[in-house]
Length: 182
Image (cartoon, rainbow, N blue to C red):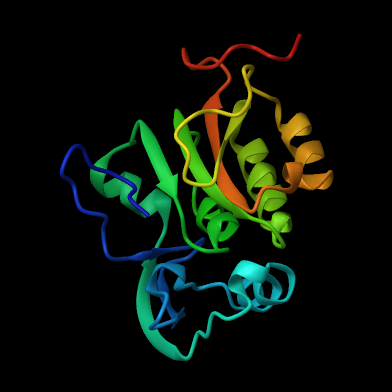
C-alpha cells in the first residue's frame, strides 16, 4: 500500500492498521503478492475462492505496522490512497480518522464481507461516491458513481460474480464524481 508519494515514489515498508505496533504477516513464498496480515481472510478465501485454494502461506514474519493517521501526520494528507493488503483493508481504514479526497481498496470473491466493512469505515468518514474496476482492467465498470448504500447492495448481491477488483471512493463533492444521489 502506498499512502503518500508522487511519480517514482516507493511504497513505504510498513503494514497498516488501527494501532501501531507489530503484527505477524503470512507469506506464500510461491505467491508473495498475496502475503497478508489477515488470518481469518486467509482461511475464508482459501475455502471460498478457487483461485486461492492452492495458496500455501507457510512462512510468517513479524512486521512493524502503523496507521494512515500516523502517515498523514508525517507526510501530509494525500490526494489518493491505494489500499491493496489482501483482506486487511478494513483494518487499514480503521486507522484513518479524517476524510481523504480519494482512495481505492481491493475486494476478492469469497470475502466480500471485507468490502462491506470498508464501506462502513468510509461512511464513518463522510459522504463518498464509489465506482469499481474489474480485476486488473483500467476502466470504471459503472457510468455513474454509486452511493455507499448502492455499493453495499452490490456486494450483498454477489458483486456481479467478479473474481476480484478495486473499489474507488471519492468524496461526494470531488470533481471526478457525478452526484448519483438523485
